[in-house]
Structure formats: C-alpha cells, structure tokens
Image (tube, rainbow, N blue to C red):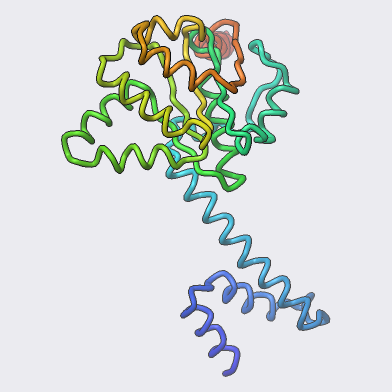
Amino acid sequence: MILEQTLEKLHHMKLHAMAKSTRERLARPDHQELSVTEVLGLVVDDEWMDRENRKTNRLLKNANFKLKEATLEAVDFGKGRGIKKTQILELAQLKWIPNKQNITFTGPAGVGKSYLAQVLGNQACRKGYTSMFIRIPRLATDLLQARGDGSYSSYLKKISKVSVLILDDLGVCPLDDLTKRDLLEIVEDRYGVGSTILTSQLPTEDWFEHLGGAQVADAICDRLLHNCLKFTMVGDSMRKELAQEGLTKKERSDT
C-alpha cells in the first residue's frame, strides 16, 4: 500500500520514469541484495537518463534537420572529400561553440557539405545545445511571411538565440536587397553570441560579389568570416555515386 502511494506521488510530481523504475527494480530478483542507497541511486539515474533522452529528442525535433540520418556514427570516413577524419572528429568535440566560431563548408554540389553541417548540428543537440537548420531560399520566404503576419521580430529573436544556426546553400539563388538586409540583421545579432555554419557552392572569396558587392555585403562577410573555420570540399557528387552503385547492384542481380 505504501509503495502504491509513493508511486502515485511520483506520478503526480511528473517523475514518471522514476515511478516506472521503482516498480521494476524492486521486483527484480537481482536487486534484492542491494541497499536502499544503491536502489535509490539506480532509480534516480533512470529518471535523469529519461529526461536527458527527452531533452535530446526535443532539441533534434526543433532543429528541423533535413537529413535525420546525418550522425557522426554514420559518417563514411573513407571518402575524405577534402576533409580529414581527424578534422571531423575535432569539430565533433564542439569546442567552436563556446568559442563562438563560425564554420563554412564550400565545394561542388553533392560532395556532402549539408550532410557534414547537419552531423555537427546533430552532435550539438546531443550535447545539449540548441540548433536550427534552414536553407537560404527558405529563410528568405520565412522572413517575408514573418513580416506579413507581424512575427518578424520574434522570428529574428528565435534565430539569434540558437547555439548553432545552419544556413544551407548560400549562393544557390540570387537574394533581393530586403533579404540581404535581413541576413545582415541575423549575422549581426549572432556575432559573438552563437555559431553559424554555412554551406555554399561558391568559394568564400566570391560571397562579397554574390551579396551585392556593397556595404551590406561587406558587413555580412566581415561578421561571418571573421573567427571562422573554413573547409573546402572536393570530389564528385555523392548522389551520382549512390545512383551508380544502385545501378551496378541491379545489373549484377539481373545477370
């Protein structure tokens, strides 16, 4: 009776994992010889782990990654793409986040720029940092919509607060003057506050011209590329390679 009352109180306090763990561990034969302190420690660990897992899942969901499978464990280090395994593992330690450093991945389409950016974003979420992934064309649309529905300021505030902002595909389409000014506001708000990862087919030295080659472009590039870790990726499109591998497998199965 006392146990049921205790479990009910745990549920009332929203300690659901602790309640479940208490019931299960007290019923386990291999726990009968454990002291009260040892059982209590295990039960608290179960509650803590459950909360950490739910926090991580929430961070991953809010990050809105396009590639859910982009994790450090899934990286194929056999395909260097211009970046060494040691460099990727160093980035995965996330020292650049507390240092408020930015990262750029540039190179041809399909070499894995967005993938690696999301790997780092995923790793950040798993370490308790907030992250947000958005393609530049979508950012322009979202900002325009935010201006129309009155949520512009709150949207900029949301972007400014995330620990890791991933801006994907800079240079894939031209930006109008309004979007360029919005981008300046974003990088200005984040300068020295959070880390931004950018991917682009354009080398960083061409960003100034792409952004209009004027004062706004100069201000954006200065804030993004100062204190920035730059990586140039090379190789053929991984999408083409995967398609060719699939074709080869089909040919083998047909023979």
